[in-house]
Length: 155
Length: 238
Image (cartoon, rainbow over all chains, first blue to last red; front, side, top):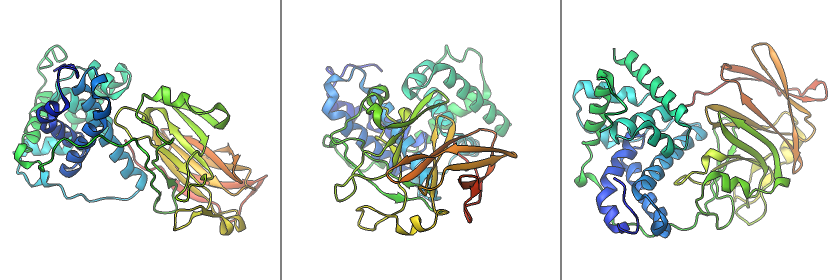
């Protein structure tokens, strides 16, 4: 979904992508409330430079993923466990989905992000590497490790 | 679909794909809070103080310069004056710098101490995060640090870690008389250099990946500072 900022206004992009970005934020580790917040922040951050952004959706995805990562790091730095009320857990998932989702949640953060971007957003591993700002070889390794781990735990 | 990346069917990959789509599908438009397009974000100028539990590092995710705005990391790192860089390092391909603090406190005065700047942190959408370390106890009003009690007892210090790449980098803020921080892991002692900054000392250690626990001692010359010995466990991190 490549699009030029010049051709797509930010309000249109907000209407078109807000939900997808909230879902992405949730899948890479944000709770529901946090997911909405980071998407709002992503659009707020993009506004002043919207016309200069070549690929708005890629920019917004990157912004969302990086913000969620920041939240994760803050939790670590704070060195305190935080129990987050997550309405997402109130949904009853089919057992196999629930088990898989729980194991995805135990992956190290970057492996989880790679899995989500590759299997949910359908980005190639090269595109994932560009989005995460990491070498493609590192992302391929993360992907392999994540699947190996999931294979073991889901076997 | 990413068919070229997965030429052969993989049941686990299919299961992961299905689970992610299902979980994503639990959020729909009706679940979202009614919000409109947000107003343009202000240029970032945030300052936050927090003390990590257990006598950890003073942690300050902060805007690094007034009027700073989001850019790619390398450009940002290039803006740091060479003269303020104390240590340069690289862990897992991510550069980091230990620099003299360039922050201001709540009263607009320069904050003493250092900041660990991670190049990889400065990505689009990321905050301009640094990890700050100051010797002493921050005053409640956010203005300055009380060092009197700490200066009277060389065993008192702050320490805390941050992740750079896949490596944990640990930082100590110690008494100005301390000449080295000795870390001993697997029976092998390493004396870390203490860098004097703003009347205190700062030492940095990239914790080797195979280290799960280690001992810390503060040294003044060849003498271990009484009361400074600590046994530490490397915290789990991504």
